[in-house]
Length: 251
Ligand code: 13P
Image 1: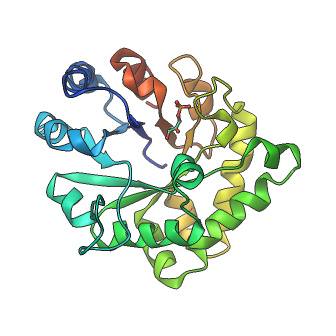
Image 2: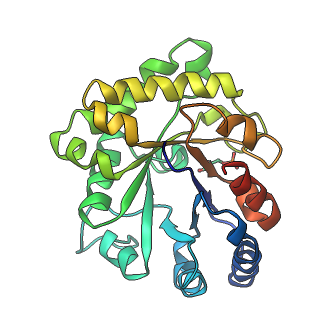
Image 3: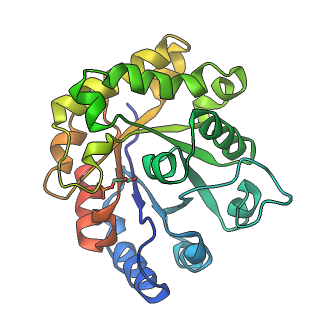
């Protein structure tokens, strides 16, 4: 049985003060979520504050992005080593917003995956189709291509056992439109089969999270599906009680 993981991706939201308030609220309610792994991915600017506040709690820290290089002349970037320095466990790579708004293609995503993994972080590797892909019945083809960036690189494949996958259909992100539990399960099972073609062992143990308009009210039915091992939560992770409801739904 895979342990559930619920990770909050705050994206570029909040202030230093609101970040602290949010972490206080989450800390107050996590004790009762014993089975679920919980992680928070604040903006980089707040990593130090959040890291300090999470000391002594089971809640883990993650970054929303990182550089593919380990150090050097990369103005504005942040390395895996720096994130590790702040106590990060996870780094999100390949989020659809990075792909769509910042031009990150499958090749860059694979490099970031490897940088995270080599740097001692657990990559949360995001894949997901656009609405147009789904309407043209291209969901599996698109997701397979995104997965292949990692599966077909021997170096990345070797690191996959220490990674997490997140399936986030782009049409469900921030839209209030959630994939139905059956729709999500279908793609999660597909992802697991794709991984199994390379390694049955990794396929059996890797956590595959669902992301896209997960809320307190729909989390339980999504997490009840056999191949959905938790969630990557955007908007609802900015509200402590909503986020805690989702964490409890994963129990
Ligand atoms: P929402 O939960 O706001 O739809 O965002 C999902 C997401 O992109 C998490 O990475």
